[in-house]
Image (cartoon, rainbow, N blue to C red; front, side, top):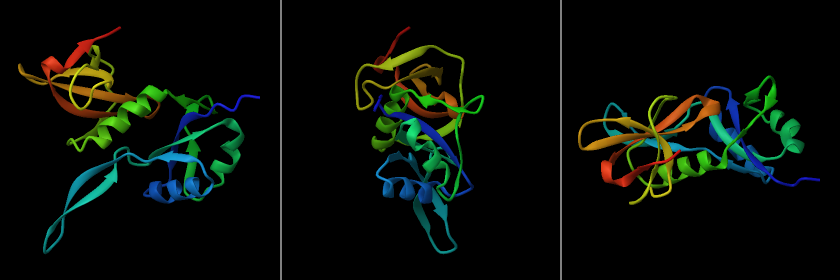
Length: 167
């Protein structure tokens, strides 16, 4: 019997990400809801709020024995996969997003980017993050860390000397 847990992406009903995360944690499952900071303009003030980095999605560390229970949680639409079979998200993708979220850098999500070179950051606060490189200007690069199963990416600006190409 294999007790190894993998990360899976869960698609939720609109604005149910936090609620689903709480239910997963009540069931003692490790849930990851990446959040980003955003400005919210009110009539009388501007406030910084936290919004899901990937609206409608969060991640759970689980094995297949939990799928039926996860699908019963109010707000869960389905577990992402191919041909109706839930597919694990590579742990390196989850770890890279965690590093970016924990960095306090200004991050945002974008559509998945399939072009560009694969790179790894070799120095600075994002050391160890791998992703796709996007050219920004002559002194900086944009790095996209992608969650392929969601078709979403997290994008951050980097100095050229902080990255190294890998295969």
